[in-house]
Length: 250
Image 1 (cartoon, one colour):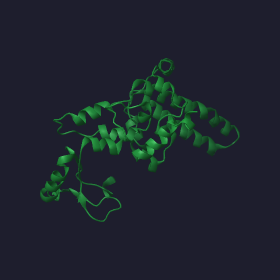
Image 2 (tube, one colour):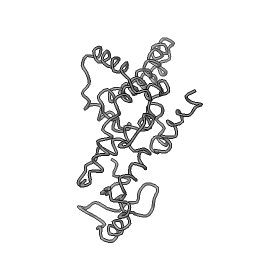
Image 3 (cartoon, one colour):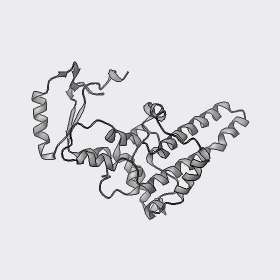
Image 4 (cartoon, one colour):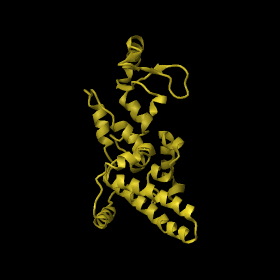
């Protein structure tokens, strides 16, 4: 279904910055227009001209563009909270054909999951979101507002699905793939035991930087589903890092 746009052979080649121009020149001059019947040059959405479908960049450029922070070096809790599951998957889920310098592998390993205390904080925020709206579903129904009750129920299901991904330490993709990946989660069968275990985890947050986070605001994807914000690293970070200002934190 997605072959109606931006479809073709896509590849990312990571090279030192000093070699980027030379590699691009070779690809533009010598890469065939097709391979195995599929195009290697595409007119991407919003463009009329067909351009090379191979990205040539350094790992550092990749990190800066996609994340705005480097998870391999001194990432802070607020940095992690500016990350979405979809962005993490875009950087960790694709096939790696060659990584002789181990740069990409080290990046993917660093993005495998949240630091433990940040993870506990994100779990707590999802439970808080459920707690805030759960009573409203029944109250709306009691007032005869079936539509309102269903809307609240749908929102609670979405939050609960996100919580399931978080508890299973799996990045949640954007909505198109969330239901598909949800079916692959190894969910606990004893919910009561699982909840007791989670509450124990939350009480064990020891990192002072995590304890100082704004109460229950959570990660950027727990705060908003605005696509135009979530797909841009600088906007995600501006939204989250604003919480670190004296005004926001008091």
